[in-house]
Length: 86
Image (cartoon, rainbow, N blue to C red; front, side):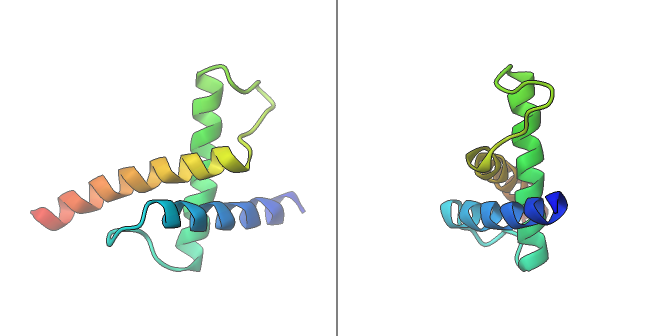
């Protein structure tokens, strides 16, 4: 059940991040939005542990997943923007 919950939270976090950071270069589709949110949760967990906000067994919450997904979207936009300019 934990994996299903992670996928649901990842999808919702990805959708909210895409509403906050709209753009032409964003990933589209259900699967890519879900992956965006899940990767965002991992990014937020990693950064939170590196900064000392989370303990070794703690993970990012829903807001952290959204912030992580926004960070991933910014990086995605920078990478895909460079590809289109060349």
